[in-house]
Image (tube, rainbow over all chains, first blue to last red; front, top):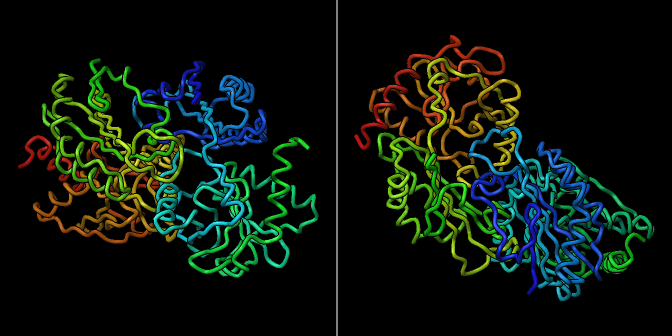
Amino acid sequence: LPDIAWVNGRFSPLEQAYVSVQDRGFQFGDAVYEVLRAYDGRIFAVDRHVDRLRRSCRLIRLQAARIIECLSDLLAEALHRSEYTDAILYAQITRGVARRSHRIPAGLQPTCVLTVRSIEETYKLEQANGVTVIGLSDIRWARGEIKSTNLLASVLLKQRAAEEGAFEAVLFNGRDELTEGASTNVFIVTAGRLRTPALSERILAGVTRQVLLELAEKAGIPVSQETITCGEVVAADEMFLASTSIEVLPAVVMDGRPIGAGRPGPITRHLQQLYQRAVRNWPS
Amino acid sequence: LPDIAWVNGRFSPLEQAYVSVQDRGFQFGDAVYEVLRAYDGRIFAVDRHVDRLRRSCRLIRLQAARIIECLSDLLAEALHRSEYTDAILYAQITRGVARRSHRIPAGLQPTCVLTVRSIEETYKLEQANGVTVIGLSDIRWARGEIKSTNLLASVLLKQRAAEEGAFEAVLFNGRDELTEGASTNVFIVTAGRLRTPALSERILAGVTRQVLLELAEKAGIPVSQETITCGEVVAADEMFLASTSIEVLPAVVMDGRPIGAGRPGPITRHLQQLYQRAVRNWPS
């Protein structure tokens, strides 16, 4: 497969792309990233992803303005070179290569890694039938708004879910309030109202999340961004997960009990249709 | 400088050591590590570091038994090749190279990176005079017992301390209880008693921490591993930081106010001497 990478100015096959063992992305997770998706030869919502990456850099004080300015063009070029029309694109910016020390060294050149890969999983079956989730404690760090590569907590939570036969771990903070899935934003529907946790230091401003909120508002679906308790999740009429990779995925069972009727609900279905239309007609 | 690296069986100069951009250590921080120190040609407490790395691997379900069995010998060989007698050694084990996906793929070969570097900072001045620290909220994930490369929170906390002219950030949890420094364990002395937070999921079992507790007990200094409140830290007679790199470092000012007399205290001094003797006569 012609999966490719671009590392600091150089294209190569993905398997031949390397970074220094002294890269702070490798030794400290001192790095931020984006996952993007191309549909029919166009990268969906690329400007929003680039804006978020710029924000992540700012929040960790990583100066990478020059590369971020070119990122949209670079991603388009990478997609073009790969010859894929539908693909997963990945962009990671690290603080750069330096002698190991926690403190941030001055004058580093950031490392930028882009990859383009084929789409192996489309989640069509899961999108049609819905998936099972389990509720777990949110053990991640306090700055989930930063899309960093410090993902070990998410890996362990996702793995725990998989071992219990679930697709995703839905996370609750110490006050039993919904935060996110291990790698997704979570929505519920209560009495016809679409609800998702309000943005905060702990909640990632998901691109899919934001697009769905806008699509819902345009479609006249009432929307709330607010605190949602575990009890409200359990009692919801519908629940779904959202991310660039899985798009809109109904969650129909949590911890062995059905959510609502235990099958994808009407507002979830409606948003799936709106989202599929949006990704192919963007900007609409 | 003859700084060197060993990556999956191959020695090279440190600057020529690379890992794949698809390494899970780079994309997920799906990796654990150790920092060790050689004194006079011998690696201090290498068995304890190897044991802790084995435990970190177990806690994240990383199967690397074969490489960990050889690690002590490999580190000794790396030190020998570098021709340093005093050096910083670093060992990092990652889950390996795989197509990007949170869930842990089966059958991966772990990546093992070792490095040997000269000691640039010995902290002699700081050890003699003591350092300034600031108190900050502990924003790290809930599993500090795992020595993982998810270190962005520590980087940001350490940087914040540096920008306020402090050497280290001393961290407190949501109940205003002492946890750790951003990259150190923290001890205080109250009325002749040496105190440090008890081990838990959130507290790293520091090798220097454990050696100091043993040295204190042998020397007849009363020791407590327990919950320590912010108020108790502020009112302490002495305070110090401990790690492999900084050894025993007195903290004499926190948030602009002196700790105790505002200079290194007698129990801190005693432990500095015992530790310097221990690292040169290990196992004693």
